[in-house]
Structures are given as structure tokens and as C-alpha cells.
Length: 331
Ligand SMILES: [Zn+2]
Image (cartoon, rainbow, N blue to C red; front, side, top):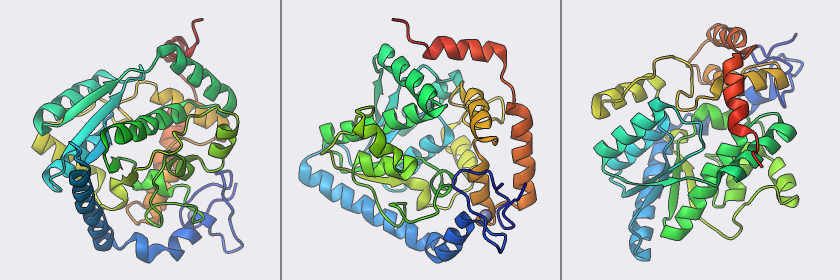
């Protein structure tokens, strides 16, 4: 097995090409755009200017809210709302999509954060049979199910933004989640800002979006326009800093385990499916980003990934059963 000499990604990684110099195309892309990606002051100033523009625009439209944020109950989305309230003084509308996968940890933290931050919140409960159909189809076609939630959350963001006249959506995707597939400048933040659901989903799923759209498998809300910014693309904050701030300012309740995505009980299932499909765990690309950004060494990333591999190469039968019962269509 060959590995990229710089970031340590394996040659089996989705979309990778390792050159004769032993360096991968993702590292080449990062190197080429390093200056912009590391201009943290410039990126933050850009974000601040967009928030000011959003306040003006909301006032002009007579909208009750300046921005919209999807709140999962995880640390990232909670931190985004905290900063939008306290630092940017934004009038935030928060919303949560009930997908039947949220944990007690996530639910408690949503309630706690809403109490302390004084933001209005909408809870959306999609038709359960429709959800089951989406999950089943996604498992059949893509061998995973996370894309369904990504899509639904962003679908409802654009829908709510359009209904309430909200000019900007701010999401809690991490730098790792965004930059893990950044190998060509195809509308990736911060180089290009998305204004429609289709542009936004292009950043995550690439051409798959066109394919699904053509088969009417996805509802893209054509014609709805709102700016969508990923908070962490413009703010350099470590996980530790996020947690510290939340604990200090909001009395954040820590999850019992250190497994990532503590707000979704099916996360180990997603890891297992990723291992089966690609042979590596979910955060492989994200840790490679941390290596490129010099926040982690190649060896530390390797140890993390090996730990995940050992943990997720099998799935607890009880979890499998609970998962099947959640996604299987009942009619
Ligand atoms: Zn690399």
C-alpha cells in the first residue's frame, strides 16, 4: 500500500492521485492555495462583512431574523449560534430536523443552549415514511445514509430562509469536512460562496447532485436564493477551544464517550458502512486536512485512524437491529 508522504492518505482514498514525488493531489491543491486558506484575519474580516451586509438586508426586507442556523445539539452548531449571538450580535433563527437518530446528549444540549442564548427555534418533524424511503434508497444506491440528513438539513435551511426572508444561512461544517475533498476549485469555500441548495450540495456531493436531480431523487428547491457560509471556514478555532467556551459560557454537558458525532446514535453504523465501502473510517480525509494545516502530525493521524479501524470493522448486533428498525419501510 502506498501513502501520501505529506498527509499520509492511502492510495485507496476516494479521488486520490499520488504523484511521482509521493505527494497527493489534495496536498498539491492545499499547497497551491495555502496563502488564502491560512489568511485567518482576512477570512474572518470577510465573514464579519457578510454578517453586516445580512443585517442591512434583513432590515431592508423587514425580516425578523438576520440569519438561520441548523442546530443538531453537537458542539459545532451550538458554538456557531453562540458566536453569532455574542460576537456578531445577529438575530438568529435556529432549527432542528428530527430524524429519529438524536441522542439524549444532543437533545439536552439543544434545550440548554436555546435557554441560555435566547434564540427562537423551530423543530421540524418530516413524514417518517418518507424518511425511511430516503434512508433505504441511500443505503441501496450509495451504501451509506448520512447524505440523507445532510440533504434534509440543507433543504430545510433554504426553505426556511425563503419563507422568513432570511438573507444568510450559517452552517457548522468543519474545515476538515469542507477541505477533505478540495482537490479542484469546484465551488469550494472560501473561493466561492454558494447561493442555492444545488450549489451548496455540489460542494459536498459533486456531480452526484446532477445525477439525482435528473432522476427526481432529490428536491433541490430551484429558485430559492440565500447565501450559505460555513462558519469554521472563516474562523480558526480548535476543538478544545470550542468545548472550553461552551462549558464556560453555556454550562455545556460533555458526552460520556469521546466518539465523534455524539449527537447521532447511528454514528458507529455510518463508520462501519464507510469501512465496508472504502476500507477506511469516516474521518480519514478530515484528519489529513489537520495534518496539512499542521495541527496534527502524520503519525498522530495514523494512530487515530488505526484506532477507528479497530473499533468500527464490526458492528454491535444490538445497534444493527435498532438501525434496521429505524430505516426499514413499514408499508
Ligand atoms: Zn497528501
